[in-house]
Length: 541
Image (tube, rainbow, N blue to C red; front, side, top):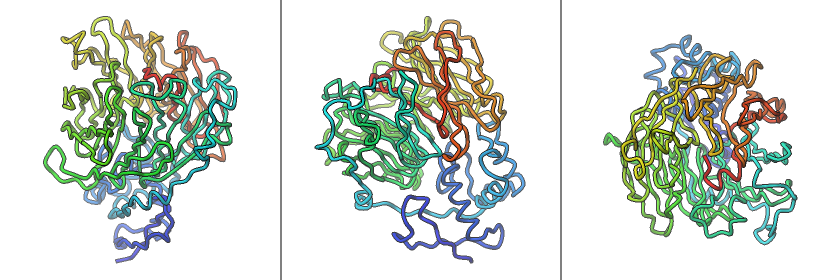
């Protein structure tokens, strides 16, 4: 047996902190130590989110050797290079041929197990860049910060702040690797002055780094604090009273409650446990985390357990956690317009799970199609069904729309209202209360012309009114839509699939009424999620 040291730099720590060795079978398949380290990093950065650090599968398939060896090296290389109709991206324009080869070999070998992370380690990683006493009492830049867009620059490990009025990039902020979500304090349930709601934003990187952003600062000082709560993470939320920040780990599988002012970690709770099938799960990852609009609680999705945990933060020393069984694998979700019901996708079960946050119980599970993925979701009002919610799907080109108003439209509530066929599987859907249209991307289709287009359908007719080819550049893809403050513009990201040394990604801006292009913002690296300050702080979808 050949011994290969796990390079902990990919988990955000120096090798000096640990001296852990893992056995790698060097017979067949085999990699050199350098190839193993490189493949491990590539897998962690690009594959672990869907397939798991231990490769047991979730949104993506199980990639343990018992599954992958049967497929063989050649077939694995084809799958990674060209993707699948089931929703996996093609990686031939992301990985080199050599990288595809070594990753294909790597997933036929036993998965290395990363280390745990203690509360003391998190506190050692906590930094304050601007002292609380130096926070300004009013914005220092004279810009309309409520119409700022906070934009993830995925592969650069940055977040860009863009002025929605002038369309100029205010600054690029160094954050964790591949920031997944950025959230701020929303107007609901807050005792903060309304003028301050939306001022502070918090990022979570896939490397578990948490950053605090102050939009009132001058651009060079907007990054005010940071910490690290995991090696692999996906979501974050701010308590309604503005006192706490909660972030969830993919590895280690836990969630951490931090002081919202300083980011000092206060409490760690493991998410390992027994799933809805009665099996113990070691890698029970925390996926979506949201703050309930009407109660002092967080909604925490425990992906592999198939459970929603409603965590009461009114007394963090004695946490009350209601564990609500539903279905696997819980991924991402959004609230209905009233803020009472949380609507979340159970990918592997092809269901949308509805939780009543008032009773803290499961309300309903709606059968939808293959691998639902609503992203930040979309709510609007339909002429027949009343208030509705919707999701795209990673596994099929389809938007499913259901009623979500049990008080006003009980006959339509939690039932499919209608479906809209799209040209390809998508990851994000968005609309605005002032728009007659709903936008859906098709990021998960392997064909470039589909992957580079978004589709728009009418709320009244349910018909697709336009397919917009956002980009035709080789190796680029269109994804994630966001409206501006007034709902008059729609911003669509273009992934450039390159590093920060060649920032050819851009955001394309469309007139929300005519659907015509009105501008482009260039100089961005794989811009992904975009979060308009006003819309997010006022719960506009």
